[in-house]
Amino acid sequence: MMAAGAVDRVITAWMSIGLPWGVSKVLRHHVERGHVRFEEWSHLALGLRLRAAAMGVPFLPTLTMQGSDLARVTGLRTVQDPYTGETLAAVPALFLDVALLHVHRADRFGNCQIDGYPHMDADMARAAATVLVTAEEIVPEEEIERRADRTVIPGFMVDAVVHAPFGAYPHECYGLYEADFAHFDEYVAAIDREGPAALEAYLARYVYGPPTWLDYLELFGGARLAEQRRRARELVAEPGAPTGPAAP
Amino acid sequence: MSAPWTPAELLAVMGARQLRDDTTVFAGVGVPLLAGALAQQRHAPRLTLVIEGGIVGPRIKPGRLPISTNEMRAAHRARMLPGITDTFLLAQRGFLDLGFMGGAQIDRHGNINTSVLGGDYWRPKVRLPGTGGANDIISLCREVIVLTVHERRRFVERVDFVTSPGWLEGDGSRARAGLRFGGVSRVVTTLGVFSFDPERRRMQVEALHPGVTLDDVRAHTGFEVLVPGRVEVTEPPTAEELEILRALDPERRFLG
Image: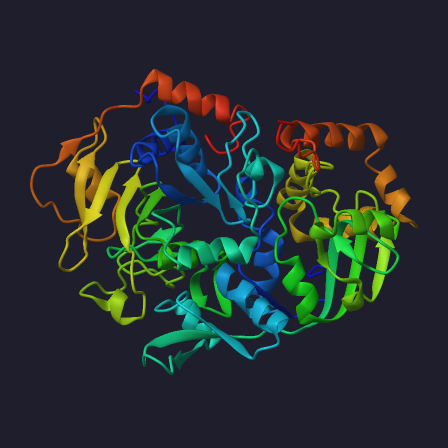
């Protein structure tokens, strides 16, 4: 999105492809030239900003980020505990215009279930004015009902659901397919070779080029996707298979 | 003569030896997590690793070391997947015995910079990836150990930006800033193991790795490191430790 010129400000805790690939040259290019304002909160502070919004309160008190230069550049303020008089950091609620979320399954009313690690997605959905969901599977309502304990986003806060199998690709979706590290290697090698200009070619091939989602997946090919599925199964036990206590 | 191990292998081994069994350790991915996984396999089988992607109690599968904090690889055989915010709140509540992290730049009081190098914060000379959970880990764990390559450009008199507060200026300034507990107890580097003097919280030598001299430390450090007394010498990495590490990261994405 930075390379496409669609971003002038980022609010995040961390940004890179991943540690082995080092600092993102694209991030450096845009921030060091002043094209993008990179506003950095600690991971917990950011999570609590979203949770405050999700809770419908203007701020939350926390112990984190105090004493750091992050507190200074973000304008983090403090609040006095009305009971003890102690000073705490107060992170402001972060209300989102739009949340873009990917889930394992949703029904046609937008009730969403996520398997594995839940990130901050449930808070993001609550914090956002508009929620757009892509789902690996669209399932009948009965399927959601059967495992209601897994529903983390209720349909009434969702504005649209899109069926997008392999929708997190080239990154992973818990239990379904592993991240395509070879693809990350190729991407970073191209940026290292040609600088941020390589992104133009990447966007043309993978984002603007394919007319449909299936055309995008075709660029990787069925064999590669099947292999990523197999690799996911090696890491995650079969979900939803509780055995219960043995019969007496 | 070159050592029969890489700098990252040395760091992971020396880091692992700092970990105690039956403790909870908030580990960054890369070398800290490798060290945690090594300790689990060797002397600390009941070590609970916590990873900031929202993962409690994983056992890293050899050959499938995670690249980032939120991956199935990081969650392999985890006991609990509470989400990112709630994982950090475990630390804020005081449940994390140790934070285990790396850093781009570190100063004599253990303050760490992973945000910007040079220039203005909003228009830096070099933009680094940012805090991630580092600020939270150093602020909220009961104790923190930093693992880092020992280079003069990293060990600076004053960090360009305090992303993660160590002892700040020493002399109680960390507590005065509102950080009620914790602090950096040790810095494990490719040259040795360092701690902080109890009063002014300045970095001091605790032990050197075999073959390393105090002059080597001085040559690679941009500030005066205290030498409080007897300096111990660490035991070199054993064949067993190196074998476990190499099985964890056969692609050598982190071991170099």
